[in-house]
Image (cartoon, rainbow, N blue to C red):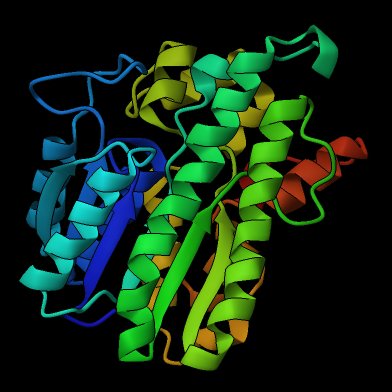
Length: 298
C-alpha cells in the first residue's frame, strides 16, 4: 500500500479491525476507523477499547487515523460517514474493510436452531451481515467512480469450512463470504476487487481476557486450550490486508475466500513476533490426530 491511500475500516474498535487499521497506517494510509465505543460511551459489547485509541495507534504507526463513531446498522450514519470521506478525500476511497461483527453476546453454542432465542439470532444477522451490505451500498460508488479499489470482507473460516457449530453464527460467517463473492461479480467490470478474508485463532483483547492472560503472557493460556498455541495477533491479518492493498495484481484474488496464513506464504509477511503461524495446516492435522509440535507450524 502506498502513502496517500485512503481506507475505511468499519468495525475497528478492537481485535482484527484494529489490527488491520494499524497495519494500513503502518503502510502510510489515511484510515477512517469506525465503531460504536468511544471514550465517552460504550456499546452493548461493554468493552473498554475505543475508536479513539485505534486512531491514535494508526497515527503512531505512521499513517493518519480518523475516528468516527458509527453504528453501521443506522443508514443515515453510514451515509454521512461516506459523504464525509468523499469531501475530505476528494472522492477517494482505496480500501474498504467490512469487519463489523458485534455478535458475541448473541451467539449461543451447543443448542440447535429451534432451541435458540429467535430474536437474538435475527439480531446477529443484522449486526454481522446487514451492516456489511449497508456500508458497501454507500461506499462502493466512490470506488466505482475512480475505477479501482479493494473491498475486504472479514469473516471466520474459508468458503469450504463446513458447519461452524451453531446455526446463526454459521449463517453470518458464511453469508459474509457470499457477500464478497457477489460484490466481486458486480464490481469486476469496474476494476474493483472484492474478497473475503479470515484470520486463524485470533488473539484479540477479548480472547486474552477469556484466557486470563495478557499479550506478554499469552502462552499461559495453552494449558486451558492446546489450540491456543497456534493463535495469532491481530497484526497478522492486518498485514495480510496491507499486503493485498499494495499488490498491483490484487484483482487475481477477486471473489476468493482467503486466509491470513495462506497470504503470509504468498507475500512473505510474519506475525508481530516474527513467526508465521499456519492455523489451517495445524487444525487439519489436529482433526486427523496427526498434529505435531505447534512450533513446527509457526
